[in-house]
Image (tube, rainbow, N blue to C red; front, top):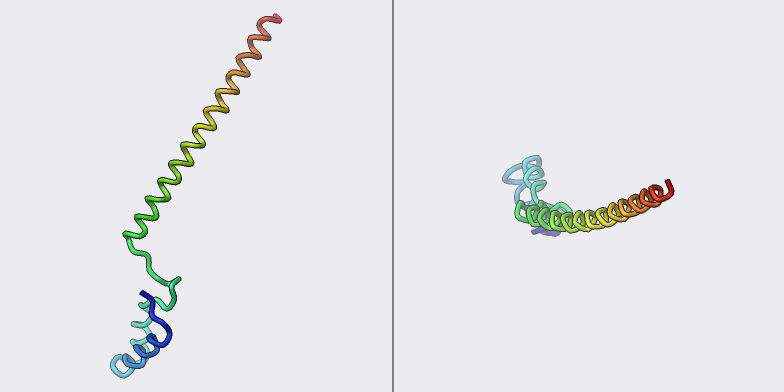
Length: 89
């Protein structure tokens, strides 16, 4: 959860008399100031990695299929060429 600037200022002003400027700043630095500073949870990271793995498996499967087709075509062409060379010899 992010805290808007007004709440941050309010909390900081309440902490300053109790903790002092330096400690209040250190404590406030532990709270995200903007959405981009939000920490990633382990569960979120695991979910993102699982999704990435699934996408990569799909892409690798597609690449494997395309490579198999290309290799099969190359082998067939080579075999045909060798057969023609054998007939000519």
